[in-house]
Image (cartoon, rainbow, N blue to C red; front, side, top):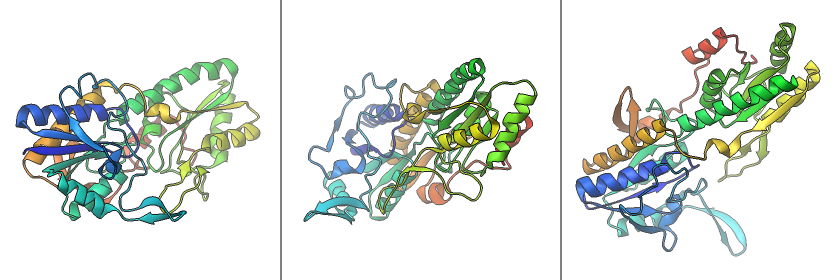
Length: 360
């Protein structure tokens, strides 16, 4: 193996730089291979200066840094790219241009670090003959085949810390505090942070809720002498029979942006229960900052394993954590069924046993 490239796509997550560092150091020190970095996801293959050498000096000191030194593009799908032609915005397939660019670089492997959307692109490029290897990244922890993705632990700890801090002010002011967390279709952050942070109500996409059920929990606590309540709500949570709440619409390329469910819950609960409510939207704070020790360790293992897999010619596959071991599985297998919180699983059962309401 003489030359490989690495790119980061989709939303950023703590630990991306640890993957890049592990790829560069493992490839250079163990295989004496050259590593190229690709700027801003797959867009780098289409832009001047979008591909550049990564050396040991390039990755010095980046282990504790959040974000990614390569940049990322959450809307950089080469199979559906928006361009302006003759004054009109159109959607075109430039995947063959990307594949041609990759071939011209004489790459023996392309390590793609990303979530569900980015890895689907990697799989499609593999079908075009591009030697791709996937590294799962998402703070939502919603990729099947791996028990956990890097970035999740850091986001989880940020969410838990926010709940801890809101607890004290909620108690002091006798309020219902609602913390809106990330999680479009998967409620892992909200469930685990909610349990760890002592939430009274947890609202996740997998379990549609009723406003009256939330109010019942708040009233129950008030009757027991508790003058405040804590609600952890995933941005993708929704009332029974209703759609998710969006703050921005989408189109054939861009996914609609969720946001606002916390305010909806606050208004309904405040009016029904006659108690003051406040909303905190944690937003991108969950994505930023220095990764935890666990995420640094997992991301480093993933990056090193991806290089070893490339050396073995294991293309069209993704590295994953299963048990205590790093394994690899086919991208098709990893992406076949998205991972979701099991409404009847042990995690939800644990929360219910603690008296936490899911509003159902």
